[in-house]
Image 1 (cartoon, one colour):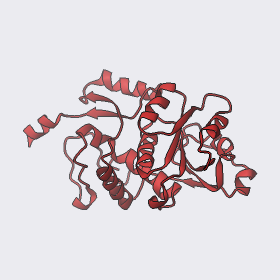
Image 2 (cartoon, one colour):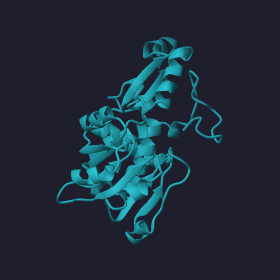
Image 3 (cartoon, rainbow, N blue to C red):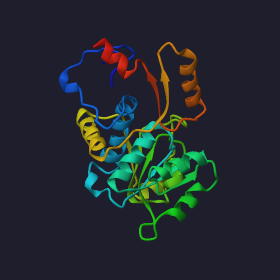
Image 4 (cartoon, rainbow, N blue to C red):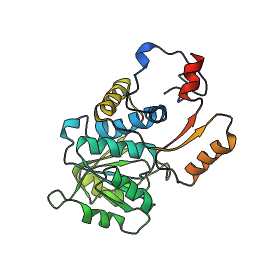
Length: 254
């Protein structure tokens, strides 16, 4: 990702950049410019966490599996939800916001619970299918007590795929998880091949990334401060996008 590490010297807050042709993927044609801008980072992170890690690279086996995605509303969590639904998984979510849980259901989530409520894992168990009353995998970006909360729900050999630890830099691990052969798999962004596969999947299934809010102009400081406030207060449901220039302005320059 440009600007993501010190390895790549260029950033993204500029009108034009020059990169090798083999580092570029054509944006899926059904996406708006805002949706295309929202896709790359969250898309490849979610793809690796779900497909490469939670499903062990076997997307064909996904149909019917029960997947829990924590902290719905963030960009990665929402992308993982959309990918999981498109693959045929039964996706369950957690959030502190009843409104976000309802919005996730509209995107295809099979159910959801508030992690603010004590014993939410028991509520989630009651939502699981009778014929498959367990989780196959958990996609988590918070850390904290996720192991103790989900170890009884996961099947033996189930996977916890962790792409972030927003609660804190440490998480619990228990002997119960060891005895059930639960696998904890760290997940970062993704490889060039994973990025290509993710974009192709989005194109095939015509998935549209969730965009929570668009701010126009790098000089619109007050509005840009507002999107940081949205993140601070956990108000967003999807990506927050800054539009540097409109498509009409770009065409005029070219």
